[in-house]
Length: 121
Image 1 (cartoon, helix red, strand yellow):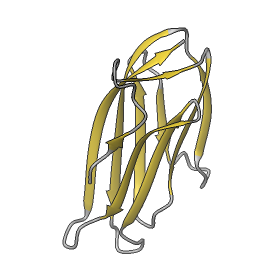
Image 2 (cartoon, one colour; image 1 turned 120 degrees about the horizontal axis):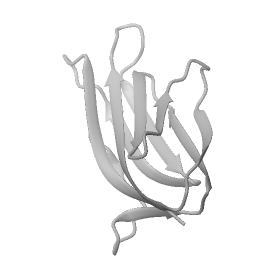
Image 3 (cartoon, one colour; image 1 turned 30 degrees about the vertical axis):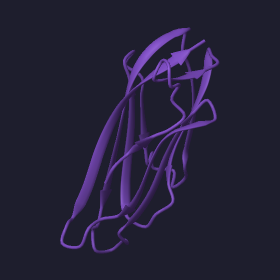
Image 4 (cartoon, rainbow, N blue to C red; image 1 turned 90 degrees about the vertical axis):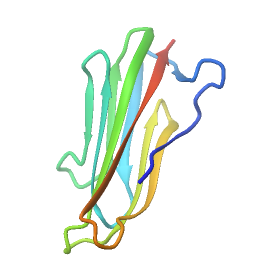
């Protein structure tokens, strides 16, 4: 598995969004059992799944500033579910991270993490 970061500014290497209300979406459209975590340097955390059976749509208040962020995706093949994963993280309506593929034969899980900077204006 490899998480691909998208839409980062080529000069700043960051995703810039308008605040202070920032919408975050975490979800997966594959068949594997998938968990996604997004953690911000101010202590804010988001997790998928959240028990609702739906894509996580959340809004948080972030004062203007820079935030270091970590996104972690884990796809598990638990024999009951399939092996595919199509994970996506959006912030402020902009896709910032994706991971897609299948858990390799003979493996029970695959995971990756990426670090990026979020700028709230």
